Image (cartoon, rainbow, N blue to C red):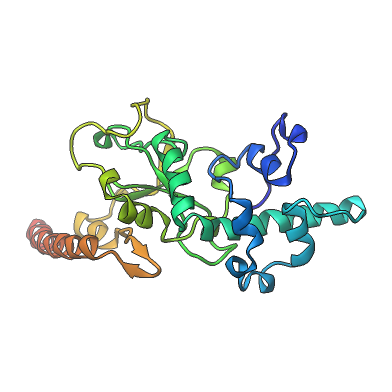
Length: 258
C-alpha cells in the first residue's frame, strides 16, 4: 500500500516532509507540525511498529547523515513513509491537525460524493481499521453516511490506518457547524461534476430476492475510538427496525408469489 509516485517538483523540496507531501498520491495528507513530531510523547509505542525506527525518524526530521547503499536507502524510505503515516493518524485528531484537515475538506481536496442526491458533498478520508496493512483508505460522505473508494489508484493504495477510524467523526464533533444538511445543495466549497469516486455498495444480482439482499447489505457505523457516535447510533437503530419490518413484508409477498 506504500508504493507512491513522486511528482516532478518533489526533488526540489527542502525537507523530507515537504518532498513527501509534494509527491503524487499524497494529496490526502496534511503537514504535521515539527514540534509535534519532535515531542517523543506523541510517538509512544511507534518504535515497536516501525523497523529501523531511529533511522526512519531521523530521515523524516532531516537529521539523517549516514550514507547507505541504494537498496538500504530505499527500505528506509518505505519505513519513513510508514512512520509518517502512523504519526499522521494521531496528528489529525489534535486541534491543530483537525484545523488543517478542515481547510482541505472545505476545498474538497478529498473529492466529492458521486451520489446524485448528495449534491457534490465533499468527502473525508477514513480507515476501516486502525491496524496497518489491513485495509486501504476509504472516503466518507457525511450526507449519505456511506463509504466510497478513491477513483485514483494512487489514493486507493494508501493505508487506511494513516487516517484511522475516528477522524471524520471527530472533525464533525469539534466543528458541528460543518455537518451537512440531508437535503438541498452542499454548502462547503463549490459544486463540481460527479464521478470522483467509485461506490462501495454492490448491486442486486439476478436470482437474488429483495428481502435477502436487504438483509445482506452492510452499513457503515461511524465510531470515535471504537465507540459508536450516540446520535448516529440512535438513528441507525430506528432505521434498522424500520428495515426489518419492510423485510418481513417483502418475505410475505415473495412467499405469496411462489
